[in-house]
Image 1 (tube, rainbow, N blue to C red):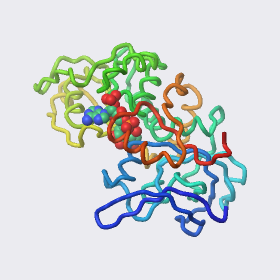
Image 2 (image 1 turned 60 degrees about the horizontal axis):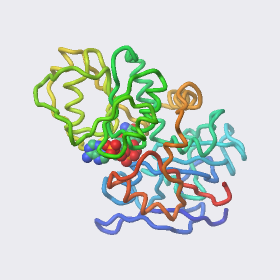
Image 3 (image 1 turned 180 degrees about the vertical axis):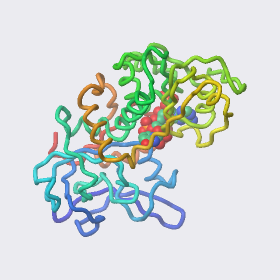
Image 4 (image 1 turned 90 degrees about the horizontal axis):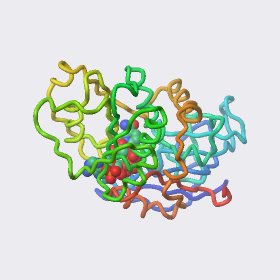
Length: 333
Ligand SMILES: NC(=O)c1ccc[n+]([C@@H]2O[C@H](COP(=O)([O-])OP(=O)(O)OC[C@H]3O[C@@H](n4cnc5c(N)ncnc54)[C@H](OP(=O)(O)O)[C@@H]3O)[C@@H](O)[C@H]2O)c1
């Protein structure tokens, strides 16, 4: 562990670029728990951060990767012992604190979760931030009264990481799922995950009235922008919209009509700073009643650290499907 390999992001003037470096523990941000990483994953945010396409990183240089799963190597936190299997998602990892794209990761103990029974380290990263976020959205919607009998739940950006897992989770919970995608050839994949109907984003007539005919019992939105505005106008009375992403835009132009005439709720979903007690409960659910039924099909690629650059390009071009797992340590199978 004296030196190890990591994918570190640097800024030179306005140019942000990631590359492979050999580091020692002293190069990493402080923390009580040192983890030998086994797997990480590629999220949209990782691609934005590593390429500078989005202003994600709070300091440079920084090791990328918002997710990690691995084995505790040493711990000054009595809650963790060498040999424990653990995972971390969000909490500033790969954003303000050196992240998961590294053979060795050092993290504050307060961010570390024991691997829930029933999940492998690989499963945990197949889910990663995307799976945690999809489950957090479902949980929040349930707490706000969403039920399958309310009507179909529409999932936007359906072939992405969050979208694929949300499609699987909601159909597994008995919801009728409508998948909205920009990919012409995704119907079989989304149908296999549990979508009853697949709609093409390009063929959508969104209308412009403050209220359009109410069609959806609820919505999982990864797109933002015009798509989220359209959802506010088309969700049925008392339905919930989980606002998760902005793959299509960060602005929201709508009126108060959906809120005051239909009681529609827009629920903000933020995974990175989710409180620990809720985080633990959601991960337990992901290993239990919410465990996706098609996780092996949702993982489209398992890459090594060397494959990160190409993976970021595919994610930013909207060309990939499902989840990309990063195998950090070559001895981990
Ligand atoms: N709030 C949180 O805590 C949180 C957590 C995780 C992710 N996110 C955000 O949620 C979004 C999805 O994350 P992810 O990891 O699932 O990303 P991802 O795997 O890259 O999926 C994004 C999907 O969005 C769709 N898309 C691409 N361009 C679009 C456009 N112009 N308009 C509408 N849809 C478009 C594509 O799916 P189709 O081709 O099927 O349409 C794409 O696969 C991102 O914006 C991400 O930053 C937020």
